[in-house]
Image 1 (tube, helix red, strand yellow):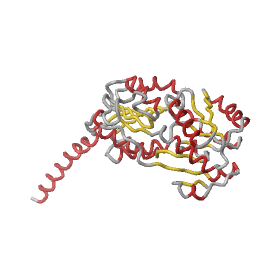
Image 2 (cartoon, helix red, strand yellow):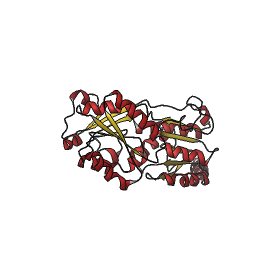
Image 3 (cartoon, one colour):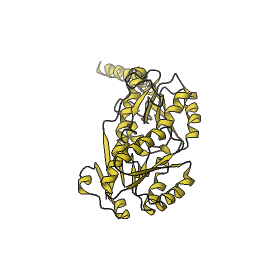
Image 4 (cartoon, one colour):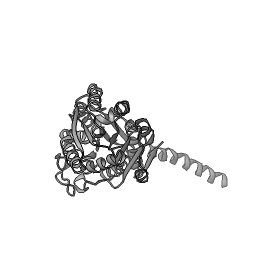
Length: 325
């Protein structure tokens, strides 16, 4: 009887095993798109994956992410957005204002979660922050509101600062807002301010040569995927021309800037992963208010300060979230 019982157990086990394996293999794989105006970056991608993982969605297991990076060329965004719509992704996540606008133009049906948008209402991305309406929601970066704070930090780091340049990219949809705020803040701080606008990477070196010749003493970068994409070239030129640069984000390409101050990119992308999970689980974008940053980071690069012959005041160093030595 024991032998018969054992045989029955083995037979049942062998029958159920393929069923269990089949159940695991048929776990539904969700497909989403990620549209970025900038270059691929491990900080951004890893933070986004972490946010998804925290809600049970793991790339390669039950999630497929279609990554598209325009690498600073906004003219490529509409094509990428159309590709993602054609792939019938369930959600599109965008990085940067231009990417959000391209996705919005491409579809009114697929949910869109935007990140790094300076002024979602002003740009027409959503009707209001509390009630986005339509198929979009996401995260603002308070780009315009922080422009004055960045100028204050630059003046504290360089007490002799008298003139400052605002550097922007001609295709950036929010440049006008950022530049206007920079000019207002500069006047309040008693600084002479001017705008330098570039159209492509070939114009960067001549722009920095002109800044140095006209005795600019500092450069503030307007939030732009183009400036991130060419961040390494920008920081190398800045050091060569002995110009302190203040950026809005500490991406790998901009780590050579003297300082950066702004919302934590990693925190925003992690939270965006949570928004995507909610939508995949049935939430509607119109019911998810646009969120603002909750974590801000001041990063100071002492290696760059030394190369520029600057001594950063101790009072400023104590405010820093990270000091690169």
